[in-house]
Image (cartoon, rainbow over all chains, first blue to last red; front, side, top):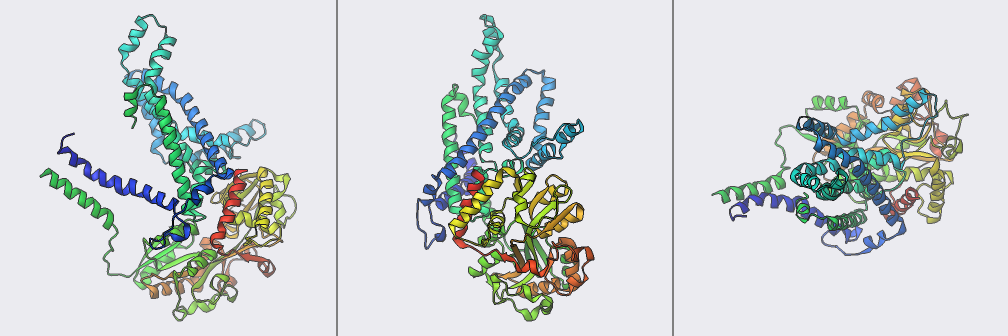
Length: 280
Length: 347
């Protein structure tokens, strides 16, 4: 980078400092101080907030959140990869339309889309109305883990499809042709050539879905009926209801660490190192 | 040259960010009011503005805790806040509320003495009551048999899967504590443990833990029984005739919301004028028609419509009121409730 262009980054550096680094530092500061000492004069440090977290109660909460996020990510991957593959294979005239249809729901507010699922799954919702019209007993579709997973998959699927699609469509077609020329059938070509080359997209898709899924609090609340505590709802409650910012901050920091660790683990699996550098 | 331009942009950005909230220049007095959502007939605000030639900046918040967080951060100095008992108690204890000059509020005489000098303001120096209500049970008369009068209905196996509890730890734990015959302000770990077990036992029967959705779900017949505040219940009963509401005989929670003036208010006298304006009989009646909670106004109660006067949610008997208890600010003991509630939700 030339010396002159360096100045172009200054506005962003200021932005980053004020809106990213400073808040994280403040959250960290809250997490290591005592509640009663939230003024500069009487500040006193403690690790109590972190110790408190290693209670089976809260470990259970975080494991449950991770489990649900993993399942959702898995479903997104299973559903999303074939779709991305299909779109990348489609003729260019259709491709943009299909992509557009995929992104279209994202123009709508996420809360609205989640509320829509409540009216689909509810006791007097679309599905149950149809079922009872057929004379069958109503099903309990809303307020369980399945409903949360449906909501997450629906909301986060585009984040999986788009990066996979990008990596598939960027792929050098000559490599695939070479594979066929060398006698590989379509299955082998997919397994040995296409899949490995699309891994950067898959990895970034997994990260893009996993991160919001693990910390989401709107979806568990609306579709899960708050029957279980999740990490996102727990942090929200500690800040807004209990007013225990210090413990809430400690959990937020722990969650950041978990995401950081899982991201670096994911990058280890990544075969194409150059691709992974351009994930974001 | 380019370097200087970018330097200027950088400095400007910092200035905009840091100085974004410079005070607005205006001839009129600006009254900053902070209230729950849907908790005032906004026509009254317009009317006050034109009548007294002031400009009102009206902001809303969803929960008392949100209000506390925002007021505590000091981003805006409000002239008048409407909030709930235990949160007002916390703010008074922290010295963030100033005394009201009741001479400026002649209509204060119409406020029912029963609601003055509440535990959160025992000397009656800081607050003017606004509305009040109870915590109780709303149920669908087509599904629930008989005329229930106890908390037991929320634990009735017959209605498993059709019961809504509140995702509000003090309210849901309060119901369990009252069912056990304990105070809903208890800090005794054994009593809280018992309440926890009761809620865990109830959990498989609960359809969901919600707050804002309860009213709509009861109106839409999505659920049969729910823990709910009286005003919400009255509003729901207005929309769905099958619904009924009662305050359980074991006792329940009563709450009184009040208006108060924060200590950093800039227009105390105008705020007092506004309080007086809201306490006028006509204005109170209009407000009742909008928010549906029970009134503290001794004259207005005589003129509400009959269906409201006869509604146990709007106008409970004195016997019911005597059997209720107000939430108190628990200070750091709130962490006990927090842990118990998280345990219920993690079972």
